Image 1 (tube, rainbow, N blue to C red):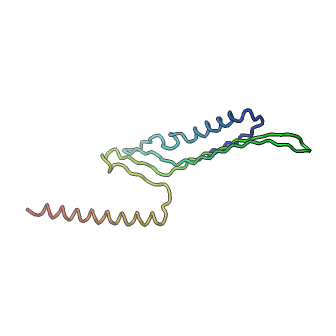
Image 2 (cartoon, rainbow, N blue to C red):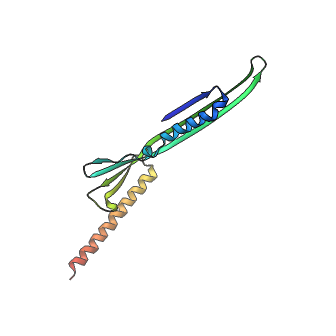
Image 3 (cartoon, helix red, strand yellow):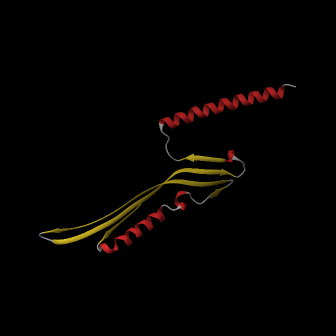
Length: 141
């Protein structure tokens, strides 16, 4: 996570300080940080996919106090965080959609895990029925 805080002494510089913060935060959330450069390992190409969080704030004020006189001040702050969420794996030796995998790096919720298990079971049953149907068609003259 990148955190930037700037205290502004001279209020006339506030808009420049805001621009500086925004420019730095934009660098942190660039496309290269969201989708990594491809990494080739054997017959696979791997690309990391991340999520980005961004926060920004600015404030200024002035006032008078009987004991201290008049004063003013301001501040600008921002934070950006980048966290990996998945890896895209492309198998060069397998063409079409079957050669692409997405591996989540996040822990699945209990509901997500249950849905995944049910889906896997259904796919296995469908493939099993399909294989049996194909076997019958081949064995019949």
